[in-house]
Image (cartoon, rainbow, N blue to C red):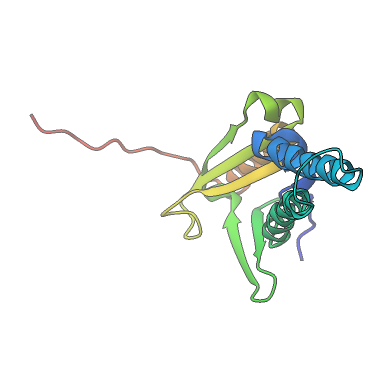
Length: 172
């Protein structure tokens, strides 16, 4: 079994602190909790169920996000990216690193503050041939992308593989 260099998954806590949707969920929970406290002192003419529903809605959003993040784990070895998916029905896919064509990173200003990003991998491997692999809410995304690029280059060198792009010919 190859040695695992890195093992990670999408971060729910990172999503909460590093995205506008996460900030909105935190504000929703805070508004609900403040409403519960104020409704307990009869300071507001708000039905007591409304603030509780806001808090439960925020908790539900975080739970759904956490389950989605727990369902996918990524492992990086010297020559493969291994995708473990699923909770009840599990699947394992592998992308040979020498087949990776592109490693892209995206992050908003808010993501940059939290060192969080979206890594997108395009390859000629069957796993990502039709659509690229998108890994969202990855902590330390810049460092992970750079390490992945180093490993891709090392895998190509060790196998003697070169990437060649062929442009389609246009006929006038």
